[in-house]
Length: 258
Ligand code: CO8
Image: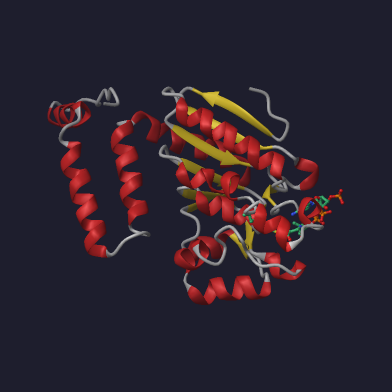
């Protein structure tokens, strides 16, 4: 499928989705978000794809929702469209892993979209922020919620109330990103991580993702029970037999993803 606002490349079992509105710093227009939804739908439906990477360019992952597209919105426009829940929440429904590879600006909706991914690997030039307050609005796609869970109240509150940006080093210290890599190595590093995950048992990876996400949606006791049930279920997989046999026979496993 051809997209106007993003590029979709398939590398073996990894799909690389590049946000591609460079002149607007990848501002997340309704058309772009619709295309992102379509691209994620097709990746999720394709059994050959095991991992997705979401990235931008060296200057911007995404500088936020498209301000020009929403500047004339009324309350009724926003409310009636439920602005724009379907396309903005698609990422959070992906069952396959999605890694955000962030270089440059990840601001407002851009930071929120990065946080909807399973983890963020940041280039050393990455800048994260929720600057909505500077243009008379507030975060609307998880900036007050996911950011607070990820980095704690004090930093999240400061960022949402002042619009201050965080550089990559601060973001790593705060737990927003899993690690930092040199900007010119970002895609190689993220592709290597994605390829490593893609070789593992796909159902096990999906179960682990589901369980980690459960930690945000349940009490510890419920989460532990959910984890225990998934752990037990893993023993039904051929990949469990293969993984443990390969370990005892001192050879690499050959997972069949079932
Ligand atoms: N929307 C639209 N266009 C943008 C955006 C944006 N968010 N960000 C940058 N652009 C455009 C600029 O207008 C400019 O276009 P043009 O050349 O036609 O004038 C081009 O990108 C380059 O931008 P700058 O000239 O400003 O580049 P600088 O390097 O000088 O500055 C900044 C870079 C600091 C990133 C600056 O562009 C900036 O502050 N951008 C806006 C950041 C921002 O406020 N983001 C938050 C937007 S609101 C939001 O995200 C709410 C999300 C809620 C989602 C709810 C869904 C349910």
